[in-house]
Image: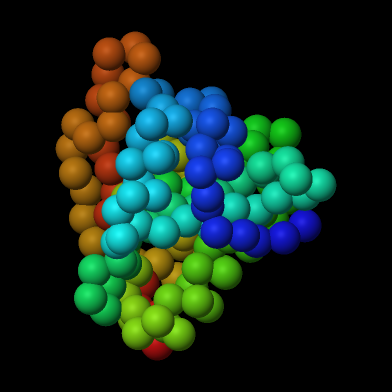
Length: 148
């Protein structure tokens, strides 16, 4: 298993995983657009050239924001999300980035647990943020972590 930069060769697979995990999920063209933005970066976690997960973030000055963290449904609960998050938190300070933000849906207990176990601090709540297939909307919880 290895980490590698998110590249155009995995955009289709990344979009597929995102659509499995989120509704509505991002499309292949969304990932291609992200790769064109110099502020957006991504790292994949692969095994035998098979995409198991990835993390995508935006860097602005000395801060970063996680845009998404996705793990293949069959690979969840195996430490891949934790490995991706840890990798990012170790790399960002080397680039002069010392604060990390994120949003997670209030109905995502696994995500909330992952971030709180890594000492992210709850900043607040954005009501009616994430749409659901039912037509309902779910609040986003915003978190921050100082990396130094």
